[in-house]
Amino acid sequence: MGRYVDTNGIRLNVVEQGKGRCLVLMPGLTANARFFDSLVAAGLADDRRVVAVDLRGRGLSDKPASGYSMADHALDVLGLLDALGLERADIGGHSFGGLLTYYLAANHADRVERCVVLDAPATVDPGILEQIRPALERLGATVPSFEEYLEMVRAMPYYEGWWDPRIEDYFRADVEELPGGSVRTRSRSDNIAEAVEGTLEVDWPDTVRRIRQPTLLVRATGSFGPPGSPPILSEAAASETLGLLAGGRLVELAGNHMTAFFGESAGVGAAAIRAFLGTPTV
Picture 1 (cartoon, rainbow, N blue to C red):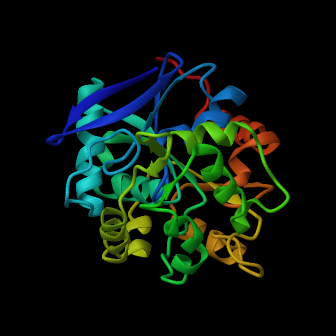
Picture 2: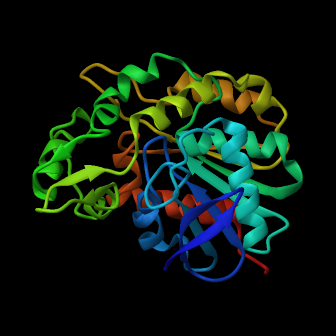
């Protein structure tokens, strides 16, 4: 069920499923809350309340002209917890949302119980921007129809030889329909550029080193980006991240930074997350 929540002077769109102890999930740099649909369908919300959020500037949430630092995003999430009546919660995220998880756990430890980080390293390499460039280049594009938009997406190097119909719901939430049937991405390139700048301003190794909450690090093992690109989270980067965490554990999924969280791999991921978080008592 989707609804709006007022927080930090803006409205965020959230998608809630399940009942019980709450797990708040935050999507990637240009992504939306529907990214987590396959994990939920694979059982993630069977015994807990999963709240997935469109971060500011993404999906159906408000899109202020500025305010995209990690501190701004953190205040949004803290306000979301307040609105949900939660003093503490399990927090997780994919990619940019994983970085935000690190940031919240280190700087607002009193609000975070446990962390689930999906494919986000403790060191942000500016070279990652080249790997995600095809995804960034779609921002602001107007395409004659949603079907043509999907064809454009399927041609990205991330999906060669792979497709899962469930990811189509995620990309449908990625765009708004315009008069005449054309579609345009909801995220704006200038807002996303400011969010990228915000990630480069944080000392991530120091941030991760300060985390004391139990943390599950999920690594997608496949290549991501143009041919020959490494995974977003390499074995070495995962090892480095675990070395910085006081209580980290690693799970690996087949697939790349996107595909590992859909299809069969989503079932493996959902089971690993549920096992890590344990059976909710409230």
